[in-house]
Image 1 (spheres, rainbow, N blue to C red):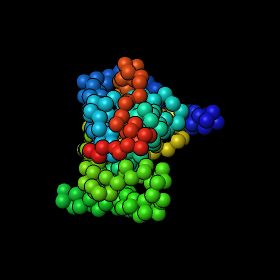
Image 2: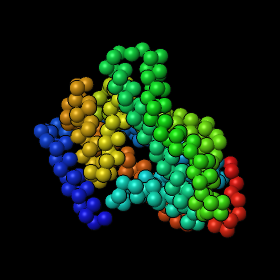
Image 3: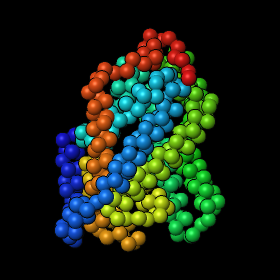
Image 4: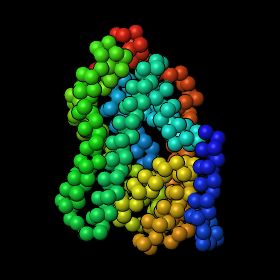
Length: 319
């Protein structure tokens, strides 16, 4: 872990040095000093709402397999995950904390991890589909209906592997002995197979989340004088977000600023503006994380989930 953190720290420094290469410091300082903080505040507010929407998406995947908890609990745990993603060196540290905090039993925490993986997969699928659709629309000047058609086809292609995996759950269960512990564990995931609408609903929420995230950054861009069509943001921000997932920097620092400079440059955005947008976007991410930190400090006990009954062999309710 120490070696991995050191590598990511070195990567962060190198990427940030690349992003700041040829930047005029006086121009960057002026961009930040003259920023319209009303637009930035609107972007922050939109970013918080996007986090709430992402928590609702997660709840739609978690409740059917036994996490029958209030929506506010999912929102709190999601923000807590954002906080620990900032604090912990690993890119999945926040997800591990979310899974741990969702139950007071080992099996419950493993199932929580499954819901988080499903949530992540639908989110990444929507992210990739949105970015590719927006770039295709810009490249070929497609109309609204053609853009919707391309987006649906791409989303279906991205989600196909998840659908196949979920569709094989009953076959996997049939291979396992009747009283095998893994059989009982996987049995709690069957609602995903029996109710395909759960994944469809999660994908729909994912599109809302990804489009909302790009819109939030566009508001941040307005604060430093960048006013581009939403289609440009829908094509650029998902690509930057995907790059930030790579374990090459800490909290995406350097990747965010450099990616914006590369992707927004062809649209007339000077490097100082792109770096300023990246820095202000990072500040909004930190604030969302701090909200999660406050949630954690206010209640540090793991959630007492109905899934704790699994440990004793009693059936789990299916929402």
